Each structure stands twice: as C-alpha cells, then as structure tokens.
Image (cartoon, rainbow, N blue to C red):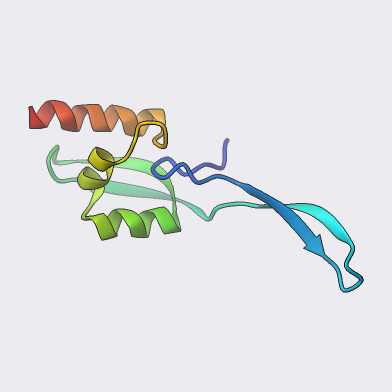
Length: 93
C-alpha cells in the first residue's frame, strides 16, 4: 500500500541519517497517515480516506471536506477523492 495522503498528495521524503562523525546514510521520512471518516455536508454521507495529520488540519481549516475537494486540483487527489469531488459537482449543478 502506497504511503501517500489521499487529499493532499503528500508522500515520502528521502534524506540522511547523520552520525556524530558526520557519516551519512540514506533514510526515508514517511507521512503520518491516519484512517479517518470525513463527513460530506452537501451529500449527507461519510467517506473513508487515508489522510496525513497535516492534511486533516488543512481540511478543517478550509471548512470541511466539501470545500477542500472543490478547491483542490485533481492531480493531488486520489482516484476515490476525485469520484467524491465529481459527486459534489453534480449535486451543486
């Protein structure tokens, strides 16, 4: 399973472990992903996503799942999030 946030597109980063002797070895920084259920107010349904904690705070800051999906580019969203976004756009029309 890929370690990528479904709403923000945040993925793993690569860096170094640096010892006291300044030896560098490769390491991976993984995002803090959580399984969450977010409620869509316009569709009156809940959806399960795998979201980073930073992404979850961003969604709450913007005003909820509906506002987040409508303002975010499709390239950042997962395929399941894009499906929810399409449902929101149909409901608004």
